[in-house]
Length: 70
Image 1 (cartoon, helix red, strand yellow):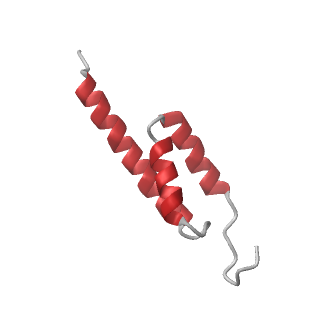
Image 2 (cartoon, rainbow, N blue to C red):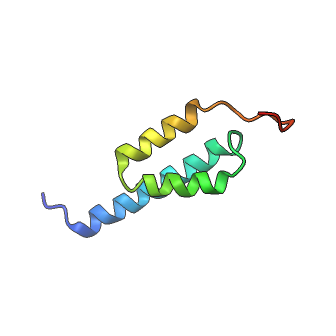
């Protein structure tokens, strides 16, 4: 079975977008800038192991406090 470069690139972009979306959903309650966290997640998702490590970091990050005190 041949896997061409186009299919590989499309799957990589799809994986990066999924990591970016999941990063945004995780970062909404845990950071002040969820958009930046999603962008970093999408960039990290271009290298799948790094993207998964970034998701694990966001998953185990403590939520920020609602009163503004960290």
